[in-house]
Length: 242
Image 1 (cartoon, rainbow, N blue to C red):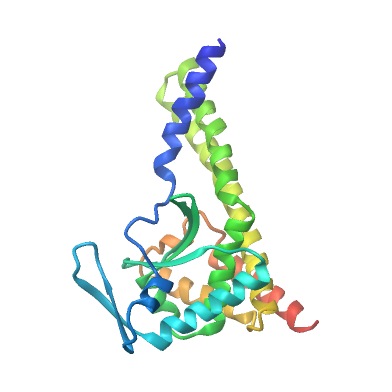
Image 2: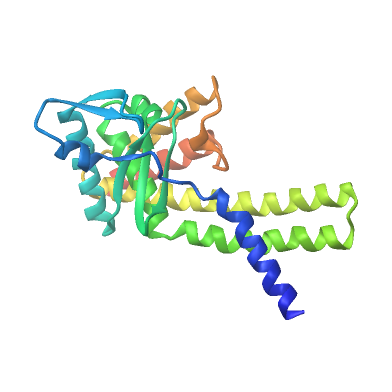
């Protein structure tokens, strides 16, 4: 029985591994700023083709905000850029280092809104500091075990679907809890760093508008945009009233 349980846990661990978001194919902003002294900085893909050009001052602005957020959160990580046609940003681990990746579509969405940048970066670093990734992995293993046990006891399609819906519902509930925690901590850290906490509201209003046109990866398994905008507006007002 013990051997079966160990084998099941290892099997479930392998099942959840592909769900970890990878930082492969991303580029450190700090490395881009260190590459030469020209005003225009080129971002290249893995084949060496240029995919985007940035003004040095723009990337320096993002790094300045990132430095502020790291200081107020008392947590350090690497900030990277990746390609992407739909707005997304995520926190992960790569080669043993904690990383926050923001894709080009998210950069286009935020533009030069410093307060929205502070909100986004605060949100992502909160995921790292609160160790949400580790919590998610720990949760997914027993959820996979539940699915496996139900399937073994009753292989009927109906039971399988019911089990999948149950475990997915539990997983999404905790994912949303993590998003609310990161929204809250990230907005406070942005405020403490000297940024307008309404930047978080502006960010999610822009994401909500974009989501009406196409699915935005950043909003998957997250609380609804309307709920987040309401909660963040209330938090911003409380912070400004201090």
